[in-house]
Length: 427
Ligand SMILES: O=P(O)(O)OC[C@H]1O[C@](O)(CO)[C@@H](O)[C@@H]1O
Image (cartoon, rainbow, N blue to C red; front, side, top):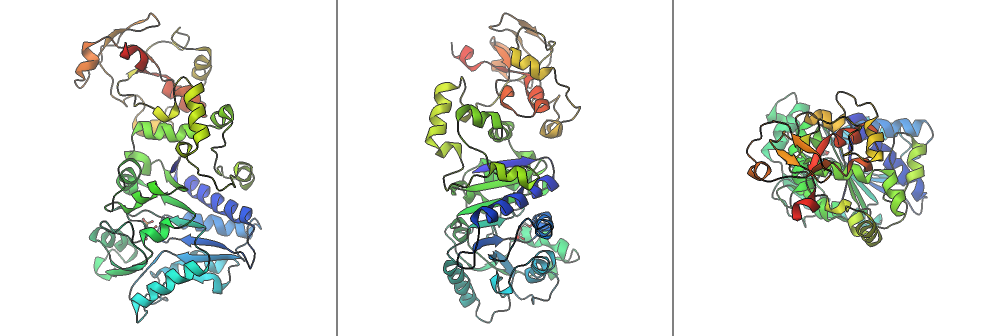
């Protein structure tokens, strides 16, 4: 699974739209070989649809040979109801692009035989050759489509009862009245989504932070069905900084580091996936091969990192103990490259570091140490009681991941923190 973090909802949405357009273009769909796209509703994909419509109107993409399958629909709402997913999709997307009505697939929430409607849907997906790319949102309770906590990870298309959390969250679309929100829905199953050749999941805003943390950093669980994507060979989660707010620093740092183009070049491994706001830029980076996206599942990447890097990006140990650096950038603790990075101006608040409170995160520690580069340190800051930090000499050094971060300001922020030298501590 890859995690793409963007500064805000707009750039995250733009990334997703670029990605979808690139996939359609590189697939070169025809009538006999259409591109099959799975789609969500809700607030998260709104800007994605807006951007896709703009790209269509600019002549950058055609949906003529694209077949769509929506992931869910309320039971009992007529398609004409403004909050039905039928109405949502036509208003925000289908009515503004050149998709054939025959290629649009939505659940019939009024079907007299709902079980038959579910079988029909699964059969139609299969008849279309399966879903090439499934775009999904993430519920506040971690749901993937309407697969609420407790849904089997092997579930397929079926009738579900919405969880109270979802009813509450979605009541914002029903004048804030939970009584108006349908209690039941039709949804593709977790396994239906997992069967797609590729899955993108977009999570925006602080409301999604807890669910995103559970789905990305904790175990695969039916209680957070979005976590199933950890088991997908080609899954990308795209979020904004607010949604990333509950992630660990080392998680953020690791996934940001993968995006460093220099890293890709250094190791001769293309880890890049479409990025950037312009279609041109995305096309340059487009990875069209069917291989896995993750470095973990790319033997060559793993082996090369391990053999030629002083520190494997795959073994990014958490910077458990850190200390805000007090030395001037010209201090001898820095390498030439680090000094170059530090020479760059650093904005007061930059991206996630700003969000996390760069000057206070992680909390300063109390230490009086002497490091292997011959520099005594004593900062006098109080710690919250990390006895190890206080009782032993710690070799602190600039964060070694810093020089791998492509964004100079981000790298400089990282460099300004000292982290323990793991080799030194093992002696
Ligand atoms: O984007 P929202 O409105 O927070 O909803 C989250 C997700 O829940 C659903 O409404 C239910 O599947 C999705 O369509 C959506 O992506």
